[in-house]
Length: 396
Ligand SMILES: [Zn+2]
Ligand SMILES: [Zn+2]
Image: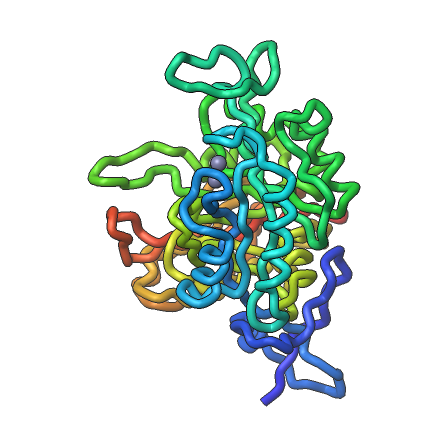
């Protein structure tokens, strides 16, 4: 039976229409159902899975572009993938030669088939202090720039259509996040912050004009602690990103394997009406995406009917609704407001629904949903999922 949602709010992102190309329907799309009364189409996004970060032998990874895209499509069964070799550093050649960038774009086009698989050509803008100043005798490298080191970290850059040359971290014209964002915006591209780092110096990675949050739309998310080869590592991934949000920053959440073995996997879900490059790009631009660490957890998180990633005004108190379908027992589903857990449940079931009216809302807040599942990867990390935040302000 056809169902549709409550009337869509008037907001920036394009409304989602039914997916022509498969994908998983949004959970609340059916659970918030109203009878279809003469409407031509249900307003419905589908979930498509991808990886937004990975390398080939064009920089410091293994395998060719063909290997990467073939693995993503046929082995990992992804709907979309971004390839992101380093533009500078991390091995010879120190600059990505122009022909490699041209080849990356041509291969992404070759592998893209609407409705089946979308490949996006990107690169990893690589700026790190070790290339800035004193390079030890064991680290032979060209240098970035003289002067005090900047900790801009790495950012992935990608474009919906071909661009002539990449905007390299080694080029003075694109050496800072502001300069890069300005240039990428002109070309219609997008950027996300990679593997944010919680060192005090790592704040440089978020030191860009807030106006560029429409270009630097997302940030890769990791848990605060990670088990790796029997040791616990305090990476403070979520905490670092929360710090940026708490300072008024705007960013959606993505995740990537950063595979150097040519093995991309499902880490980012986008909500899009269809599987085309333009639709995936549009979802990422509007932060209609969420991040997972391992399992393909389905989550649908809305505030007063608005989708994740949105920013808008409301009258009255926010009504938050989440529907989660895990692949194992859900240990925790937490609603986070302004960096602090506002409400959480421990469903101990594979799926759950959470509904919460925030009576203590004081006029402006951001909210996101975090899910932790019981299953563990080979190092002992439980599966996580994080929705992009929703920002809301009182209209009164
Ligand atoms: Zn990196
Ligand atoms: Zn990388």
